[in-house]
Amino acid sequence: MKRIFLNLSFLAFGMLLSNCSTVLNTTTQNVEIRSVPENAKITIGGKKFGLTPQVVNIERGSNHVVKIELDGYEPYETQITQKISIWFWGNALNGFLPGMLIDMFTGSMYNLLPDGISVELQQAKPEPTKRK
Image (tube, rainbow, N blue to C red):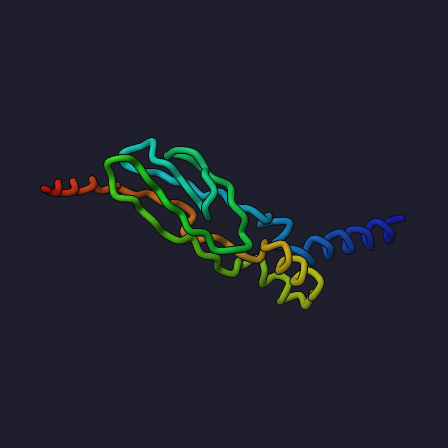
């Protein structure tokens, strides 16, 4: 009985290591977005996410273009990029190809950087009036 328990423990531990990133990293990541002044519109990849300050949950599987806009201020645009997570290398070190494939297809092999955006918006310059 003790031997069966020990074998099941090793099997469970091996399964955990087989998809480290998916289990430990998940397929989405929280990114905190702040602006001065607050209540600026947040758009990520063309999708509206509400107003600043806010923590948004976005997919790890791709890069994201973040746009922050507020009337009377210049729009601010930046990119959140993906970098390979250290958890992904756990699969490589233990030689478990299926876990690596799962992590690649789910996007959990990545971390998004930066994990927070804080911006001070610049007031828009008034447009000169045209004379006729």
